[in-house]
Image 1 (cartoon, rainbow, N blue to C red):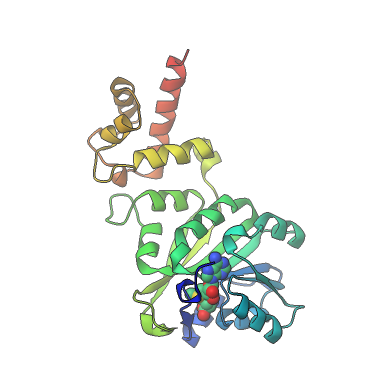
Image 2: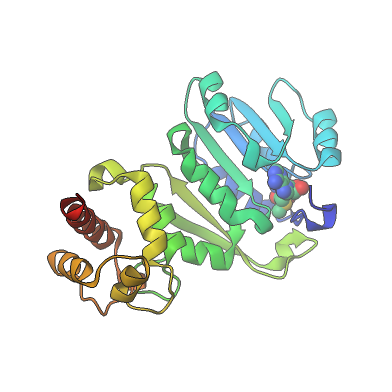
Length: 269
Ligand code: SAM
């Protein structure tokens, strides 16, 4: 476990912001809500009376123990664990429904947490998450914008995202060095609709975005696709070989991947 000073412990003390986060979850009176990093319980206390059941996952043993003694075990299960090891499938199975996730995330592991939630999409209905503003900008970015990249496509493949509001460092104690943004993520994966194999397409995305500021044709070449095969696939997908992956929509990238895999399959003995 990282030292306490490195656990991303910036506690939210802006009462209005806490209300807005809780309100963003909507009616959760019949839901099991999982809170990531409850800390001193700022959001947790407001959620208790609203959720049917609350599971609060806190890595810091001291904070977890304080929460356990302060909150009714009938309404809140405090789990002292690394959220990256939490079993969302088991929690959803025992709840008998998909979970609602909320959290003012520990920023040092934002991306691993987002990927963990994506991997558990089948067990989560929606998440309302506070992240560093720059990360929210990337997650919600549209093709061709400054912040659009691998993280944007990956997150958006698992469902629509929507930025809700931004807070200054003064909303937290101690204040972090960055602004923070709350966003909502509804889990409706697009793999089936787009006719994609999840693992294969995610691997392809990592290749397509590997070399920043290089053309898609260069990235495909670096990934090992033969120049001719890549050229035909780009042409069939109506993509200019000089474009960069950062300008391509999920639909264009999925069209390209399908053209490439069809060509690779037809040339493989
Ligand atoms: N929710 C509280 C609030 O808004 O005031 C605290 C948020 S604070 C930004 C992040 C919390 O996540 C801290 O309490 C920290 O101890 C906890 N944390 C850090 N790493 C964690 C991990 N890997 N798993 C679970 N909790 C973690």
